[in-house]
Image (cartoon, rainbow, N blue to C red):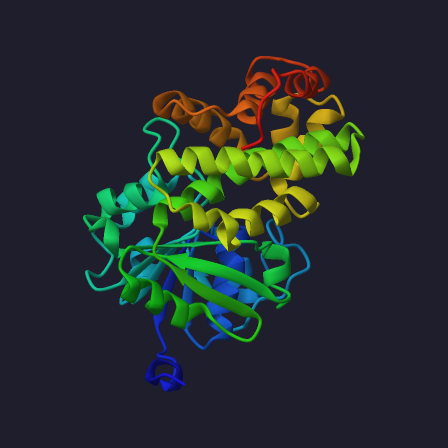
Length: 342
């Protein structure tokens, strides 16, 4: 064993912003690892429920949270003395949350984010948003991603993820904080690849949900996953990612789990669209953020910026925002000009 493996885990004061399903699941991992964890939420009723009843019924119904886990609506209270700050806000709210936190985050705190998406207006990745708002170097931001449903993590079912940072020591600090016998954590230096894969896979999950909802079967789903991975690779490569990342946990691993499980919000949203509901009706019934919807807009803009062909993304954009019938979108994909797979 290395000296690092023999070193006892350091107990960290940790702040988790915000208290959605994924933030709550990761807060549970940290609390189970003996860290002092405070979650921040804007809702007083939610904060009271987490603190007093040890549940978060809106986002993780039926899950029992560690008694040591607490919550507050006071951002300064959550961040006071925090040695690790986990940002798990939706992509649309990340800049606002980071801006509010910027003057309260300790300069030497470990900064981790676990959000899969781009900022719609700027097309920036979340690590760029955080670095800018917090006044940090891009190298100081750690990204946590990989095949991981919150509903399974909170039940302590075996899960494996990746933490990425351009500076390996920062990734290792995050790895030490999160890893345990149920939650295995690998490190990676390819922040771009991990963030691109985590964002675009949500679009492909919308597509597989749509396909499953239309009853198109496993052959179609396998094709969407495989060609979806090709789209992720093309865009990621154009943005400077390491192609090997897409063969790993953040790439094919996350893509498979998101495209094949009813736990996936994006898969569920696609399936509901296939039933004839409008996008507004789907989002209202979901009651939670469906990152793939916003990401479809961002990815279409990024594909134009980098000159990358993304036919699945293009067709989903037509369905989500231009009123195209889902069945017609699938036919458009099947009737594209013949080409070589590679």
